Length: 247
Image (cartoon, rainbow, N blue to C red; front, side, top):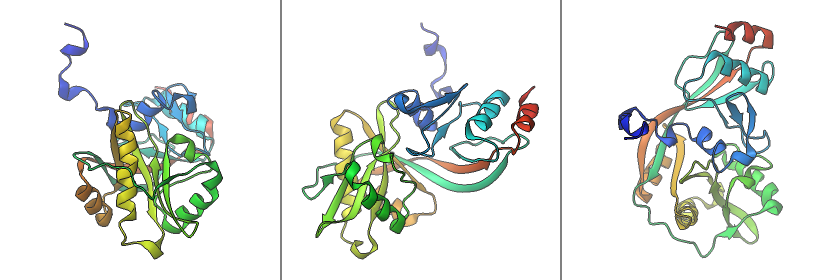
């Protein structure tokens, strides 16, 4: 019997418990900026970064050095205590959903979006606020959109990519076109592409976003776990963090 087989299944972390780490050490490794055991995406690609499952003092020192003095960094899914010198600046309760019978299908009106569409995509995100979308976010995966009279009015795409899974993100519709089911159609179209690769779709949303949760559950997503999206500010002086980080 191998060593891994002797570990109780319940004790093993699920790959989606730390999806940014799984992505940055897997299919998105070519994006990874690393210091010690801390990884992050380039700042013009995504704000997501990855701490080890059980960060040690040295990891927090590396994160502070990677981010820079006084920088605010996201800590998605982190549930522990931040060390002395760090300040929690935001906490949003979230929920993670996984495919549980999606009727995934291509959409005849959906078009693939590319670098030439980024400005329109950024403008749509600014109007709808589905979450961060940066100049190079489109490089993370496939993005699909729907246009009317040439204007981009709805989109959805792929973000984190842990092995075997792809996150659906940036789901948004121009307020003037809501109620037409465009978001549902695009989510199912993106999910279809993910399934065609032999992978499973998942996504995140705010735990208080009841309308989005109802939509995702109606499409065939199942709540896998609740989580939290934290942000924290690094110490103003790296020397202070290193003093804290040394056992």
